[in-house]
Length: 239
Image (cartoon, rainbow, N blue to C red):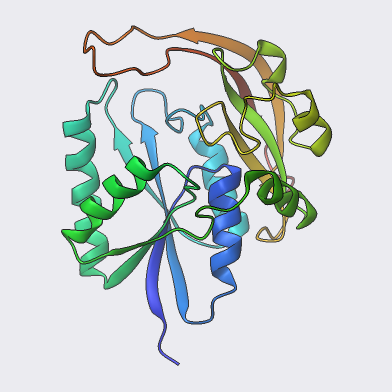
């Protein structure tokens, strides 16, 4: 049977991991790459704050090659679009025709992704689209995944949530206006174990870091700018 080739937009977080889990059950689709954007200045995943070394360990334990697109510091949308277009063109030449995303209900983001991919005849796939987020996070945990919160938006959650394990008890501690999957950017995560891994990715928790970024002068841009990050430190694998 001939398989259709795809890549997955990879952050190392729970929605990406659960989407990959869903798609690996499709015998007609081959996930050939995990595509990640990483800061060239800090070698960390954008927004999640996870070190590049841990992403590489994730990919090793999952068994799918990691493709990294390096973003310059303070990259604007024009730069981001250009770099991603270059990477997508490489994938298109490799006959990759599908792109998998972990988005759940952000319509404008879906439209943006589909528009960019259409230029290269690549079709976007959203395995979690419009799913109930309470049910999704329960299904994620019931499947055996383990994840830790690496970044919290200070507008939505306080410092104490950074570095906490994602469990049903954690969700009970969150304010009612916070989406259980953090779909509105309330928090980001790192998945270190679960059914897609050969073995767990090992790390230790470092310090909690507070970051405040400049507010955009563009009145139409309303990005959040105050976050807490839990630094995850890779542990060398035993020989």
